[in-house]
Image (cartoon, one colour):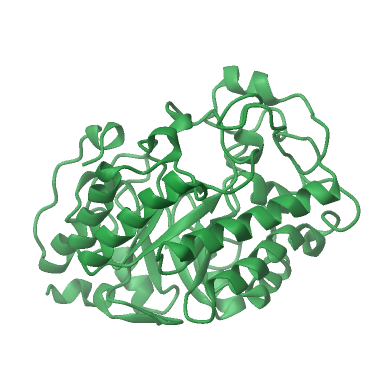
Length: 380
């Protein structure tokens, strides 16, 4: 092993799992599960990453067991081919995925997902279902976003806020899907609470202007996530971890923030940690960018400092500051921060799309494959 990267290959215990190294495959939407069912090609795709020595695989976002969860969105093509975490066919497909990964001595956890404001009304497996937004708001007009103006025009007008009872129904849907994931043998559960999707819009003051149980100050706005985490914690049992992804930025506005100070961040994170989060998956556009003025700590660093939980950083590994993809760029900075104890795990996205053996090559100091955009369009 290359001594320069030795810190990345220290094992880490999280509840009943022992991760063989600190590199995690980040969840990335692929849209190759026809009708919501992961096929043999999806199983092979994940197995190859396990064979390539990824410490933990977190799957692409999977639709939870609620009719409003998944549909067409402003995120690219084939949204109808997002995998689901319910239904006999989808669960059989996931069982095959899990068996393939375990056969390669890998670990795999699914990410549960509800698109929220990014689901276009009248689309998906249940086009009759109303899309759900905490206050009926998509987000502020004029935010810094890469979402197309054409899509924004379709969703910008306010809709009817859901009832308290319907919000609880969605909480229950996450829990049902967690039970389903356990039934097919997954090693834990992850939940998407970031990037302006449903859970995140409950956290963000711009999109949650409710009164009562599910809205109010920052502590009240986190309650939706807290209730989901409590349910997931019971569903997976004591031996398997719960991973929670959050972010400051939103797809609706990259400049958005949940917390403007460490004190506000603490008010947001502590209830989630107490509810049962084992690993915070901290999504930032750049993993090492300072989170608050007056400190060099990243958002992941602040998360670990405030909660004491195992923390995973993600954002820009292998990307230059201007967005150029160079698969070995900035890895030395990841190593330095793990050695310093700023965070515990690093999630890698596009580099692992491109090269299934990326982790093994990091270990042995071997050259990576040149990046090709074919990785975005095919399962390789």
